[in-house]
Length: 565
Ligand SMILES: Cc1ncc(C[n+]2csc(CCOP(=O)(O)OP(=O)(O)O)c2C)c(N)n1
Image (cartoon, rainbow, N blue to C red; front, top):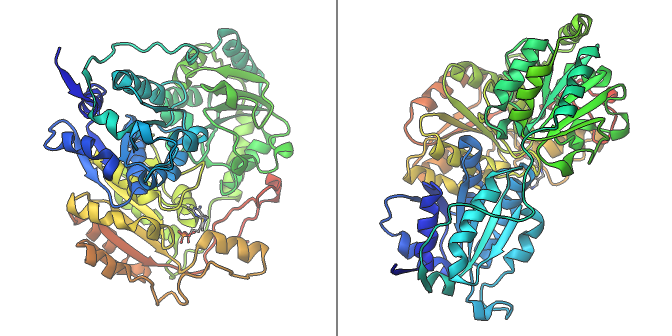
C-alpha cells in the first residue's frame, strides 16, 4: 500500500466518518492540512472570520443535525480562540471534534512561536483529548475521537496535530472498530429499577415529568416521552435545553421550569410527589435553593451519565441508560394511576398565573417573538439565540414542538454563540428557516460572521431585540441594585443606536431593516423571510422591559417575582 501524508490521512479519516462540513480558520500550523483540502469535493470548508465563530458553527451544526460538528484552528492563538466554544459544547453535551494545529514535535514545550498546550488547557472542558505525535496513530485517533464524541453522554473531543506530523507519511488504514478499555457507556437501564419506577408512578398522586436536553440528544427519546406522558396523562415540564423534547402546544405541557420558567411549572415542582427527571442536570437555574427544591417528591432520575445522578439533588430511583431505550422499557411497564385531581390543580394554576406581559401599543420583545412564532409555525424552523433577556423571551414566547429546533447555550450561557451557531444549523439544515434571536450586546460579539454568511449565501435571519442595554444584567441591577446601571449602558437613548445595525448589515452586503413600531413587526418578518441572504432586523424595543416570572438566584421557588400584578 502506498503512503500518504498525515494531512491526507486526516482528511480521508474525516470522509470515512461522513464529515461533509468543516468550519475553521487557517494559520501556519495547519497549512499542510489546508493544502490537501484544496479542491476537495467531499468536504466543504467554511472560512469563518474568527475561530470562536468556527467552533460555535460546528456546535450549531451538531445540535441541528445530530451529527458530529467539526472545526479547525491553527496552533496558539487560533487554538485558544476555540476554548469558549469547546467549553460551551462540553456544558451542553454536544458532540464536536475540534482539530488544532500544533508546533513541530521537537518544539513542543520550548515556548515556541504560537505554541499553546491545548491538551492541558482543554482537559477540563473536553470529553477527551489527544496530542498525536506519531502519524501511524492518526487514523486510529480520529476513529476514537468520533466514537467518544457521539456515544454515551456526547461531548467535545480535541485532536492536537503537530505540523510535522501532517507532513510525515504512513499507510492509510481506517480501523473498523474501536476498542477503548474502560469506556463502555451503559445504554440499557436496569430492569428492576425501571419496574420500581413504574410501580411508584401508579401509586403516585402528583407525578411530574421533568425533561432535559438529554431527550433531545437521544434521537427518538422525544417520541417515547410523548407516548409516556399522553398514555399516563402526566404533565411535563422541560428545562431550557429540553425545549422541543415534548410538544409545547400539548395540553400536558407546562413549558419551562426554573429561574425564568412558568409559574405553574414551578408550583407543580414544589407540590409534586414524584418527579421523573430524564436527561436533566438539576442545574441551579432550575432548582433555585437546592434544599427547598421539590420538598415532597420521590425523585427518579434517568440519565446516561452516572456521574450526574445524585450530583446536585439526592435521587431515590436512579436509572442509568439511554433516554430512548429506558423510556421505551418504562412505557412497556407503566400503568396509569389516578391523577385527575392533580391535573385539575395544574389547570387552575395555568389559568391563574399565565405567562403575561403588557401587550399595549409599545414595541415589546415578547410580542416580536410571538409574531415570529405565528408567521413560521407551520414551517420547518430553527430558533437559535444569544444569551440574556433575548434568550429567555425566545424560550418563553415561542412554542417549540420538535427536538433540535431550539439552539441555545444553556450550561455556559455564552454571549456571541447564537449567530455562528445559527449559521452552522443552516448549513446542516439548508431547507429550514433559521433565526438568531439576539440582544444588541451579544450580537456584537460575533457579528463578523456576517461576512461568511453573505459570501456563502447562508440566509440566517437575525432579530436583534435592541434595548440599548446589556439587558439581563441591567434587569438584575434594577431589581437588586437600586437601578445603578453600572457597565450595562450600550447606547444612551433607544434611538441612538450604536452601531447602526442597518448600515452594518449593508456594509457586509446583507439586508438591514429597522423596526421601531409595533405595527411594522409582521411586515418586517415577512420581508426578511423573502430575502435569499442573511438579514438583520433591528427591533428598537422598550428599553427597560424585564423577563418575568423570575426566581431570584439562590432563592426558594415560592419567592418567585411575577412582574405584572
Ligand atoms: C461571553 C459572556 N460575557 C458576559 C456574559 C454575562 N451576561 C449575561 S447576559 C448579559 C447581557 C446580554 O445583553 P444583550 O446581548 O444586549 O441581551 P439582552 O439581555 O439585552 O437581551 C451579559 C453581559 C455572558 N453571558 N457571556
